[in-house]
Image (cartoon, rainbow, N blue to C red):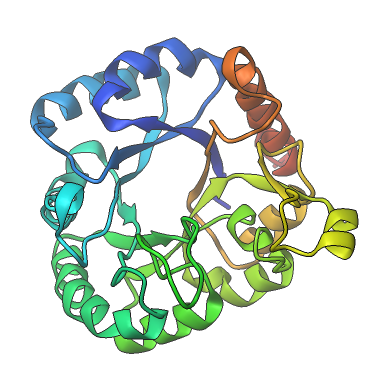
Length: 294
């Protein structure tokens, strides 16, 4: 079985400078991310430089993604839809087979009112991706939204997933899943992954810690924090279970650590936490591959 690579996320604009500084820690893959726009990013020149690093250090670029609201096209999201198109067209330059991001949302309206625009936009993007041999994966982050109101993304709830995938039924449209974004809604991620694993194309390495004592005393709408995003190895989830479920479903993708969220392993401890997560996740997958005797 193909080994599940463990890596991390890097900003696409600074990837050429950042990857050489951290790849020696043992990261096996990188996801390139952009916020709302790819801007003036030179795909050909950057891909050439990153390919040289790939050959030298034996890693892969698993995903390229833009995180904005492609359904509105307003303000800072004016270029988000065009950035989706650019990433789909240029993913192959990096050897990436997945383009990821948020679905977008009709701002501050219930999720079901976004399905029509979602169908229009991602019906076309899905065809574009299929023609170019790449998949589309939606991160399951609520970005502070609920079913009734929000911005950015509707793909944070399994009921929404059913509506989305029914509206645009395509084998090359799925999820960029992580347990954290379900745990903040008090959803148990393990049975969810068992059900949805066939639609999971990429996994973000981010966990959560839920303070159940706070939930039971104060609920989730009071002034007290009840959940914290965590780097894997410091949260509540058993990642050996996650990797087992992924393997049982013939998952061939990777897991990229999403850092910069942990309340403890941050600032000068950021890479300390990320490298701990890297080694922890490698142990959860069973360590390094060992061939059987012949």
